[in-house]
Amino acid sequence: MRKAVLLILILAIIVSAGVSEHYFIHRTFDSFNLQLQEIDSLIDKNKSSEALEKVRILQKWWDKKRKIIDGISFSPDSRQVNVVIGEIEGSLDTDDMQNAESKIDSLFELIKNIRDILDFDFADIF
Image (cartoon, rainbow, N blue to C red; front, top):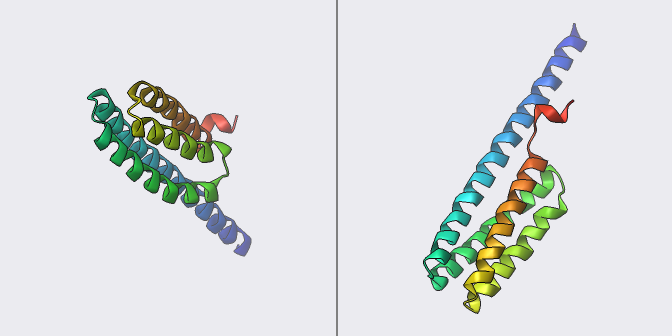
């Protein structure tokens, strides 16, 4: 009886950790997408100074979230995000809106891939 209770308790802990991770990943990357869409919109409107400020805010935000994400599961791609954000910042510093736009597109794909890697899916089991 004790073993059964212990097994159920361990299973409950594992399931709740998985559910918590799932929601954290979704909230984080949904927020990332929203911030990135806002920056993309500012770039489309040729508002480089406003976009640059938003990129700097995104960089600080991502630095905090990346530490947690690396704790969940290490992904080299999560470190690549910083590089791409830096490239966007550099492009906006020089008013190279076309390059900034292409880097935004790359970043959308990169964060989609990271989300897919970190997110649990029943297809992962089979």
